[in-house]
Length: 237
Length: 237
Image (cartoon, rainbow over all chains, first blue to last red; front, top):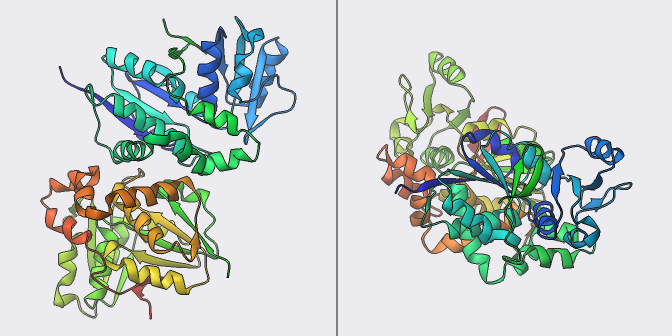
């Protein structure tokens, strides 16, 4: 059987170079949007609705939805939740829908709409996502959310970790993929330490979220594979 | 004395995120535009005039200038030179001006015009560029040309090599800089082998330029520091 092909897009600003049609796009925003989504859905949240703007987020909130909004690393005033995975473990969220808008992660999702399907990836569900891709016959693009248009270390390391699991079934040759894999091999003995050194984590550390960062670096905490269906992200069956 | 600051821009598509004013920009396009410029100027070319379009290049040619043009790795028909550093060693070029338009490198130069000064860097003149930056009091942006808007391995490795030489005098903390330095440390025992594995080199290998690639990976072959002055690149005195 021919290997499937896999590409890596390092920031949403470069996604226009990739042809997404017919492909599976794995969106990642390790710190912290996709880590929160994975955590929430694993803890019984029914669905997550990603929206690009705070206005859309507020409109849903006025209709009675729970609304989560983060900008620049902080929870936006007036919303029910921010961007910490621990907030998504709250039993009160079970069976509910949560509307989410974040600086980078939800932007990457809204820019991936041409894909055949969109999966949500993080270190927390790495193996589950890899398994899903291995059993699919579709080519893949890993879409890193980055930081305000720029490259980010933690998302690139996630891309490298996923490539590392897909070597037998997928081919890849772009410089971005080679770089992501090499970086992951360099970092894998202690991903968390490497990410703490990175700029985004240092920026976030001002908000006292070191515990969040440690949690987001945990491998395979959950086995859910969140997938976009219509406007909602739900656990793929 | 405070350390000067240094940033890394991985592709010209991201340069709008960087404030270049008052700074030195080091433009690099290892395969092969800036390697050619360094080689030509070291071999006695008087000046190099970078232009973005083939039309501009041709207009200069009609005025009697020597004209070099490359697109997608090949010399464009009707021009005097392509993009091989060996062509720039020709004694007939001594004292002449050469007008150059290439796929990536000259685009990066034209997008750096807001800088206080623009230097041309390659592995071939790595230490000379580093020395120039150490003796200057200005902050620095390393502008990687990449490949058609995307990240490229060889330019990122050059950025890492330059950062490695500037640790004592310059500070850097962006994820792009951390990544470039880590990649270089991984590759430095055999930069050429690493670059041959990369995608751009594999694409170029179809044009039978393996010798060019080996040459462009040589460290410190020349001590010239080309600098843009007005419209022309000349050896900085």
